[in-house]
Image (cartoon, rainbow, N blue to C red; front, side, top):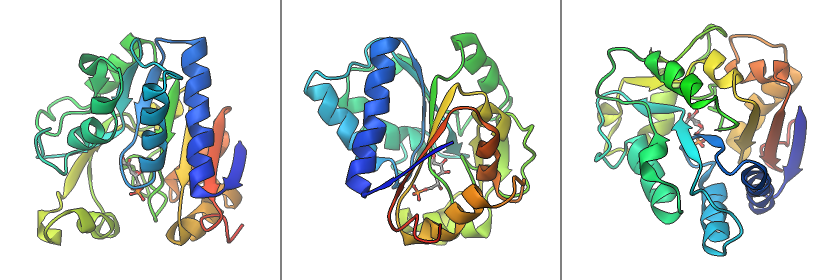
Length: 237
Ligand code: F6R
């Protein structure tokens, strides 16, 4: 695992460079997307590079990590809406090749894994990390062998995400997420962490044991992970 510690601005630029390199080498790469506050700087940089002609997504595809159950893509808190507004609508990607798990048709979540496999597998998966160590919405205790599935969100995750909703009652109780195994099948992974609230979990993820109680710790077992952290997220290492 490669660990890079720098300012939030610099880690966004460095992570973006990984996308530039990948898409130069493999223009039809399959990208794994994440939502949340953490990737916003990276996405802004990808938009800038795309507009400057330094990167093209025109032959790329994407599979996002997760979606709230019960929200369709027109809901402004859905992850489909987030991806469209923060990235896809501003770059030259073919939107028909961007996928986000459906929060409405949740009859066969693991079909998402089959779609990913049929497309050739994710080349570069982006991850944030929850304060409790979740990746995607794989909360502590999720089996490392899990595929895409429905999860009940923990109170701590609903609490952390209520800032985006009018009240906690409006935060969905369930989500559909790629499983830990789905994530681990990506050929390369970037995990980003920004801010002091992430410091304790970054220490646990990087310096603690590999355990299902800290889902992100599984990344210690992956052969190609780059962790980008700002100084505040790294302050307990
Ligand atoms: C989002 C996702 C989550 C977030 C995590 C951190 O698609 O899968 O695991 O990455 O909750 O969220 P932020 O970046 O808002 O701190």
